[in-house]
Image (cartoon, rainbow, N blue to C red; front, side, top):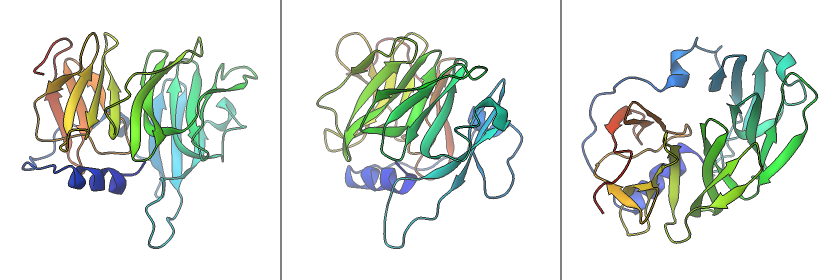
Length: 239
């Protein structure tokens, strides 16, 4: 999923609100800037995951495809140069979405780890917390929220009537924050125990990077590319 596609969804569901000045950047941007022509997909203790964006066909709105560059390449030489939609470090491995929309996990980077398929019909961006990943699944634009445990391989679709959804984020207590356009206008929802709860906001995640939850704040890029820090409750919220 790319920014233009998400922007179109926001326009269709009637997103409004004034844009404020940019705040602090997402964590991935705090690392050393990559060489020209590269984008940072993730930064971890062992290295970086970079991408070389593919040129989009004219008059098309395809998925963002990048050629994966693993730094250092010795971490996962078989993945270096692979065409992917997204890639993130998780634990001692890497999780990625390939161009067929399969969610794959390559564990144990220091050994000859195997690629394991966690899910199919997956759309990014991938959100990561500990050994859990969250993402959207289905046929665009009818995407619902799912998560998977990369250690056990357990996969769970969490919603069935909130499509379209996009840009999920994982909270510290297992909650998920995600944007839904199911009611005709975008709503930021918290998924946890019980019914989804609404987080009041006029600005919504709309990026190829997953939002992150840190210190009680949801940190994301909106459709204008501005970075936003929004206070969110770990529990409760207005319905």
